[in-house]
Image (cartoon, rainbow, N blue to C red; front, side, top):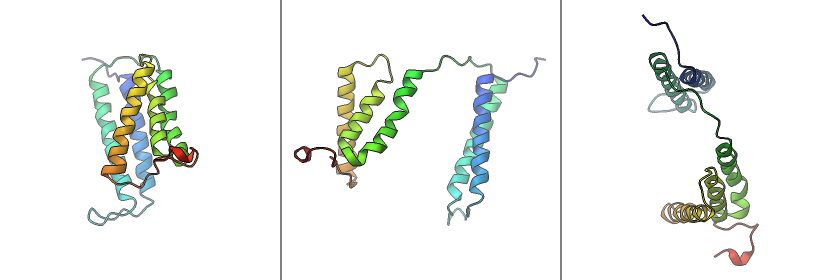
Length: 157
């Protein structure tokens, strides 16, 4: 019989999932839950917390059954480019407008990979910007200001 062992990587991940799921479940209980047909403000957070706890339990069972790989080096470059990108978007979308904010956010996030070339990043950002404008502005009709007040007035089409 083999000794009881838990894979450290998956065990830590499972513990975090279960901890945060339990924390948010307890927090959602302070809100009105309601029923499935008449959901209160605490219903959906409670359901998501339960799903998080269940995922943590599944990962924990997997951590007990299978030996995983050790945690590799931390991808600092990816974190330094990916994490600030949505913050940049949130801070600039009203001032710069939707189009420049999406373009610059995609450009920032594109350089998270060390293999990204500048021309490829520009093409990727332009394509994502065009797609976003077509979907959100034209297809869905969301009232985004395409170019904001921080830019010269001749730029607004």
